[in-house]
Length: 393
Image (tube, rainbow, N blue to C red; front, side, top):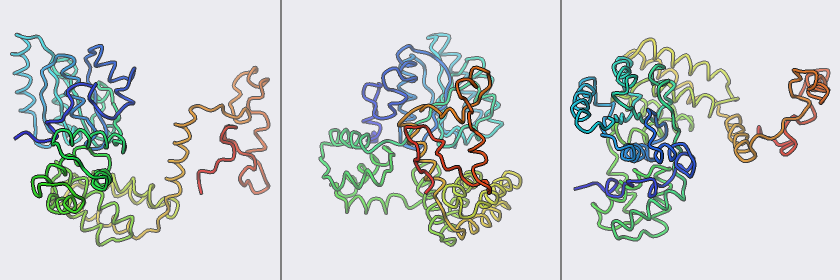
């Protein structure tokens, strides 16, 4: 029985939903597909946003043999087998060999070193997929031979279109409450929404908010580092620290460790949390979180669990202040909205005589020495279009 997600999986960009910055008209991945450019790349983004689907669409477009592995369970022998098969197939068909390596961040350095020469020689074209920053988890020589495409969470509009496609396939119309609940629960993860619809129909025969909630409780009881509960548990871990509940945070941390989660994954989330949620309230929280991450790198399991526990309790009990993070989001929103606004002449760098004549850097001293006590300059240094905008509130 073919899973529902597989049944409705798009086979071309024409049917693909989301990631317009990559697959829209004239965007890089669409151009690569249309012109059949063959190169290695890594998809970096959250779960359920189209990484596997785009990899398959690309492989089909360049007429390649597609080999799919999960780094959670695969090893060097699996790569050897693909290389050997590729040589036999290539001698006959001369088709390129594409390896799609899901969760590439879970390949250790030795495994990545083994993969590298095959990518260098062109025997394999690599498409990696990861939810983690590849700069941290993919070795530099391999990453330098790959382009990185960043995928975003699916928008509510995208999710609505995908749910509509599911409705057409299963010939069932969802009411607005069920659609809204699914969209909120899935949090931009199409696979999660589709799986919930399929499981609810299997258990109850019809879709309603009540049935969806019952399915959610029964479906995700066990932590599975290959599946959705991986993300549910790390979410519960972060939200427990945010709520200043060290007991709950420790419990979810232990669930992850006991299930074989990479302790560096947990520690990395703690470093992010220190700036995002604690921020200005306790600036040294970032120092503690970084020290925990370093200890985890140096010591490893099982002993590093003590370092994690120490850090978790500290971060959970610390005062919280998201102003710096919220200010960053607001400033980034204006950068995206307005583009490269002209920088005021007074704070431009006058590196030539002509620039000085054009008033680059003129009267800059009054901004660096605004008052006797070196307080904040009274005049805004932002571009004129957003002058006096306040991000940090």
